Picture 1: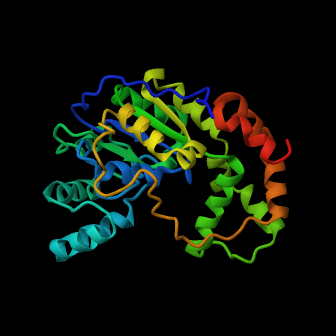
Picture 2 (picture 1 turned 90 degrees about the vertical axis):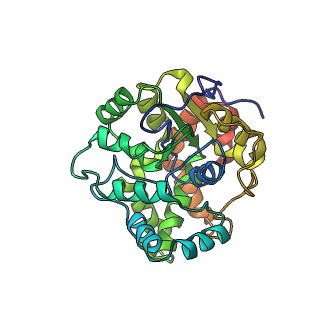
Picture 3 (picture 1 turned 135 degrees about the vertical axis):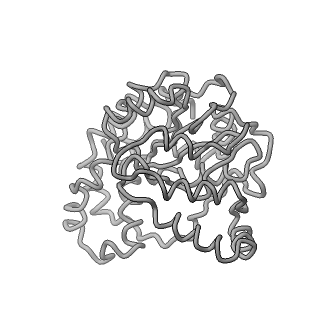
Length: 304
């Protein structure tokens, strides 16, 4: 299939950063970020936060998931860890409890980069990161501040066919009950034009916005298509880029593990597929030009 034209993932300096995260994964939403979290959370070279998606830079209050996890840990940590093991999550220890306390105490009405850096104080010599795909929506001035404070941090982005990404995004909200699964194609297209979808749909703009403030050697770009067709190869490339040893297993998690494979997915109708592809035609063509590799084939999928 060949490498994407934008595939930058060299084996740079592999020493963990003294404080703060060693890497950010900023998307794409519905592009395989859960897969990445699962590959690193049980890998011996990494120490990851006990839950995915910190949302410190894009929200004004802590994740409810963190509060629920802290309450369960306080109630019966052994029972919680047994349940986590069954779901293929790593067990929690004191470092995680300290993290959850510090996370809840962050100043949420304003960005405090020093307080955020201290979240990762107990990572030791392990590699740690923040996988929050909604950081794809951050404005340039905030990206600049983050990278100025963590200049050695690496950034990962996994791009996905824009039509498939949007439909997966909407499907997620259908599963959550936010969107009626019986909406017509016209009603769904009106949602596609809403800000919460638009901000995440134009991946060429997102990549350009982040790359402006991230050195080339610190930007790791991958394609969802390659993840599907060659999960072992993409896993090896991503782990090597982040400084981990791809030869070490991620617990019992295989490279092709998809935690959401059993999720209820509403089929994309031919009518909506056609309307989405026309709506995103410019982005499909721009992706083909800028990303290369499998992305070069995206417009042809829709007759463009």
